[in-house]
Image 1 (cartoon, each protein chain N blue to C red):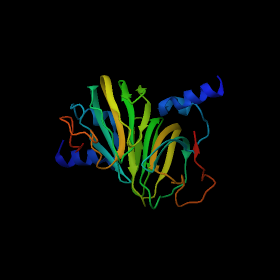
Image 2 (cartoon, chains in turn green, brown; image 1 turned 45 degrees about the vertical axis):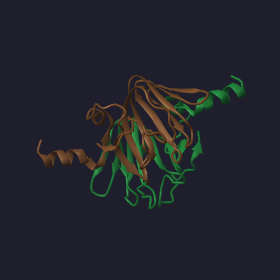
Image 3 (cartoon, rainbow over the protein chains, first blue to last red; image 1 turned 120 degrees about the horizontal axis):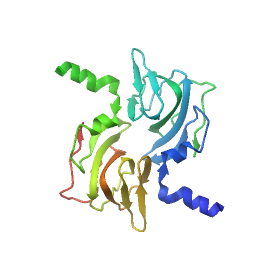
Length: 130
Length: 130
């Protein structure tokens, strides 16, 4: 495909196919930016295993599971998410995502939100536009 | 189920199942509020047929199709969305959603966004919390 055709196809009126977007990357715990609106970002991520426990002081964060299974461990409970289920973790709430096998999620959060929130970790990742 | 049990089940750590939420209503073109974060609303809607052409002057609007097929007619092009595909219609852009058969969509937009935007129509609907 020519660069021009590829560009046109990628743009395609700005439409995003979740399946096609997930097929474009393999990295885990490295959210990819796929949409932007009203100062918020739509990101896709592949998760597997345990993440670092963290919080976002100024950002509520939505996790929508598309494939796999995600536990979000809170202080006194765990939210268990199967495909087609979402939860909003409010700002300030400590949480630890734990994915059972490779799990695909859609995230919705304010632009500039870091994946590890208040924690500086080797897991802290720059967000790349897909 | 007792009221108390039902409440506990509905709350279930704030988790939302898209399938269970869609099973709770039949009305078409009447978005239901299922999540709130950072001043934004997550809504679910069942659409069928043609909607009124409108725009939102202060709101970008995301349409994610979950079931069915949605055309979003813009000035000079139509964005055709199948399940697992989304588009962001930027603020100020005139658009007309046309759903081919009953179509289930998830919407992200700022709190307070009216479904018919700048147009006052019999289709203008209050947003009910599910």
